[in-house]
Image (tube, rainbow, N blue to C red; front, side, top):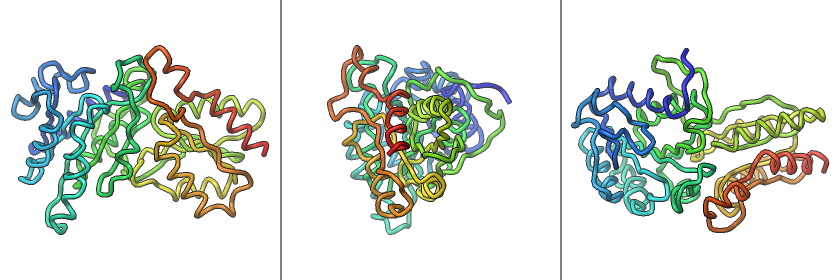
Length: 325
């Protein structure tokens, strides 16, 4: 297995689905000759032609409209929204149309659209480029929301998302694009949708996180281990639906839990996880449910984002508080 960056793993996955399925199409702003603003689709137009990988006008609502129409006529579109902050321009297409259409058609039609979009802080982007907007989409019935935290999962999950007959929002973390490498098989493989993963075994406390915060949680777990506090770390991977079985099995073992997200505390994912735990596993807990999240403020300008985004120190401090309760 070669070692790949997160972004190269996604490119490899896209390459393989384009090779395997002539009905797959990639389109969006600058994804063709330029290979996308981050070069995620680099060389794919040269390899598969302008009919399979092509640029669109700067019109996110049009990109989603095209994707919906293509999926109705037998294609498997893979549109890119250049930054997650730009999904507001396509909100009706995603939430008001795509997520509802399988129901509208009485289950007679599938809508296999995988919307790729970068998000997340830590790279000092301009305003509206780093926002964590997953809370708008995890509350949308009919839409799967997926975000990998490492290169191996990035390739396997993007292939699974594209091969799914349901619409999927595939969130790619900007900070992770080139900051980490992992062993990634050259051959095609899949990682199951709707499935969380225990990425570190532990016995004293459970840390539930997703995307870049998984790596912050692993760093916090290393620090806790120096004081003989054994933290189990779970990567959600799927934000909608959430794999509560994996979380609950861990809580039955550790009896203490901290839920972590980069998004503002008022955003939905961590609150949903905490609510599910409180409803279904309250008798397994020996302490309150801890939460680590960003402040409930507008995403700050780049100069302040490192102070705003939760980090391993924040996670470690909350974990110690809950462990010592």
